Image (cartoon, rainbow, N blue to C red; front, side):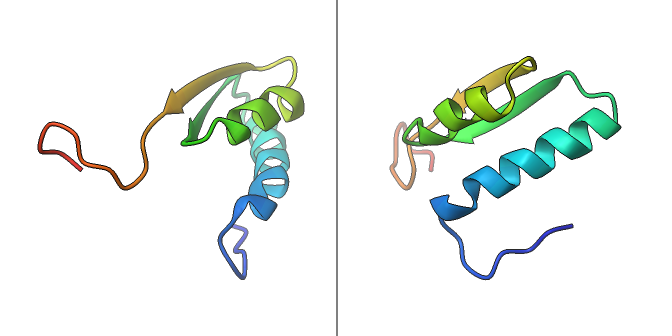
Length: 68
């Protein structure tokens, strides 16, 4: 496990590199990336090149249809 001192997009590259390394060690071929702005998805496509990347884009903090 890896813990960061503070949240933020400055942790994205480290998180993606760790995910790739650990995923490869476990034989994973597909990675799911959650993103609100799309920045993580773009970076994931670069860091996880050669792997299947699925993107789940969502709105942060908003309410739609009575759900949060």
